Length: 64
Image (cartoon, rainbow, N blue to C red):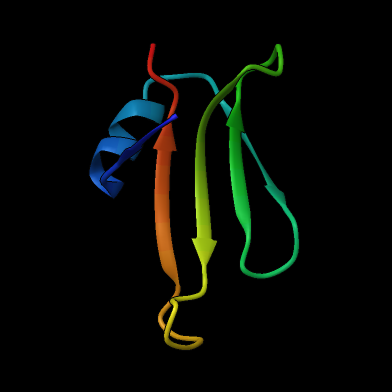
């Protein structure tokens, strides 16, 4: 998976027919899959190295 900006992430998933599912405890990881279960994208929230706030957002997409 390739790390991208928030804008690139939503431009990538926007035209596709994908469903999201949230996994884990807070902070969450959101997986974006097609109807066949193929993973297309992932949004990962994590705590910063120096504290609890603000959360760090990482956007990942599958390179096609």
